[in-house]
Figure 1 (spheres, rainbow, N blue to C red):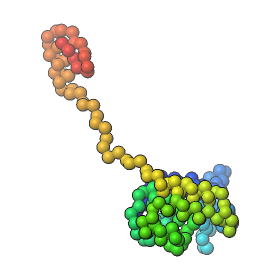
Figure 2 (tube, rainbow, N blue to C red):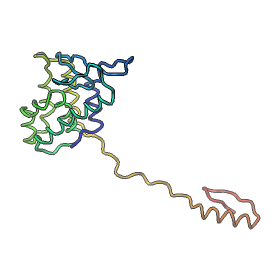
Figure 3 (cartoon, rainbow, N blue to C red):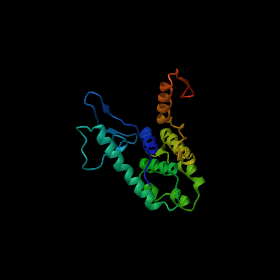
Figure 4 (cartoon, rainbow, N blue to C red):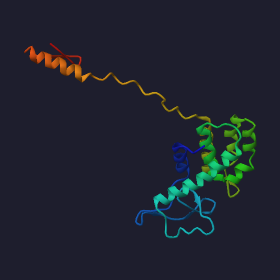
Length: 195
């Protein structure tokens, strides 16, 4: 599966796009709440990556796509039960935040693969610690992910409403021509000429 646009917006909302420099029109690295160097939408700066000169919004989007892809692949590989799009997006958000290694070794994954869908929102709440301490921001995010998990997206319309029948212009032109030949004034009723 792929993360939906709603899922990407959800992740961006919770991660934020931090350290924007309006004069330079670039994003710069910053330290996250635990002290890790981060840039853009929650991208952890890895050894060998150098963002000291800043990055554009386009590069932020590329890093987000790359980071999300790792989460998608891990979920596709490790989750053995069917997921709805909202559930997939919730798992991507969670694994994006805590890391795919947490997914692989989690009780949450084991219970989910047993078909215990209803346990997932509660199990997400166990993942709200940063630096060994409970973090209110993470708790709020886990609650939001639990709500996302439990709330299916509205269905996209599969049928479009039927349009009003098109006015037959050939018939209108013929009626107007007949009226002109009869030299009678033309009146209109319900979109059609009446002689």
